Image 1 (cartoon, rainbow, N blue to C red):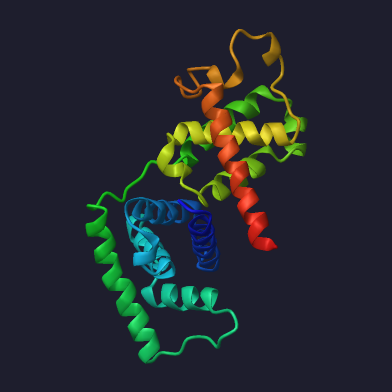
Image 2: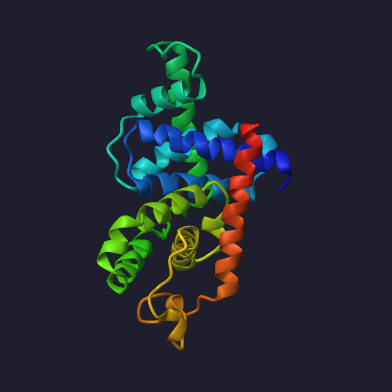
Length: 234
């Protein structure tokens, strides 16, 4: 994938996330929409499709998959307003109905293109479990004062700006964002230096096949994603 294509995909995922926040969606539908988008363009060329139409369609499709009660009218209006910030809000008319029909038709196209394989196992439930385990090992006051959960969730949300969700197991991504959060805050698990295993090697809690190499690879890809964001901001 070229650098220009990477930047386009980054912008579209950011567009999906921004529209999702305005629609008050939960994190799972946002993750599903992002994964559908990455999966589609993993198998298709960017130049052949309008990425923002695909993005809006992924959002609409994700709401149905994750059973979020969001009207198509709201999705079309919010996506249009998110993409065209300097234009007047969309009125009910020819433009609205054309966009609505485009999204509806594109939903069927996406489902066929992905062979209806649009249900995913996301890292979120694993991260919840891992955060609970880590919190039990930490001093309560320290855990309350240092925002490890908030930082971990932020890294997980941002990780969907690239194709990590397709390349790694959800358990591994969950461990990696938690590892990165601990590193960022300079926090260490009590007594782990004296243990025979690292905290992320405790098989009863974490993924049994996780390795430091996998964690470092995922962390590097997340940090590379922030470099792309910095380039777009210039």
